[in-house]
Length: 185
Image (cartoon, rainbow, N blue to C red; front, side, top):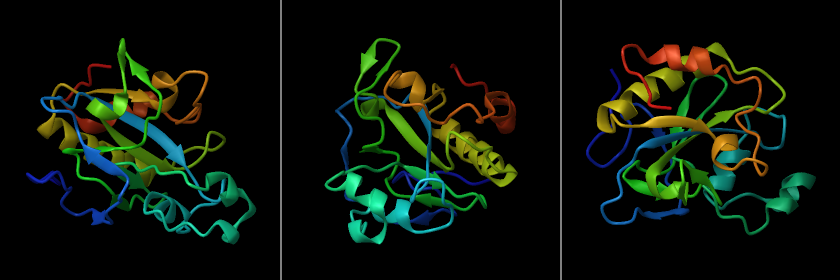
């Protein structure tokens, strides 16, 4: 079984540190997993755009869409490619900058208490089997460390502003993918 170490790094993940993170507020308990989707350029999979965005190395001249991302400083804890390969950018003990203006069950600033997981994809296509398998494994590892976690989509914590993970994300399949655990969502 893959596990998170004391430093918040997932054993077996490819770790590429992002500068777009900071410390969580003192005493803040992690109790939310936020599922996102992302592809850069939009609708294209397998390239380096997401990694470059999360590490502040995105070449704005490489694609017309990238100019709209100028100066954006964002990250996520994890990125799951279409193949199921997982990249980690921020240790889970730190705050990644993935949620933006957000609210979950009356609590604002979801970055403070959440773990962000980006799936390589769009709102307009299904996710791959390998992604669901990796997401289930990752969720089990997170629940081992943070057993009180709920799960929500970016659209649930930022309604009207965000739509991901989108209508093609299979929540039932996701919830059934991590065994005996039950998320409190």
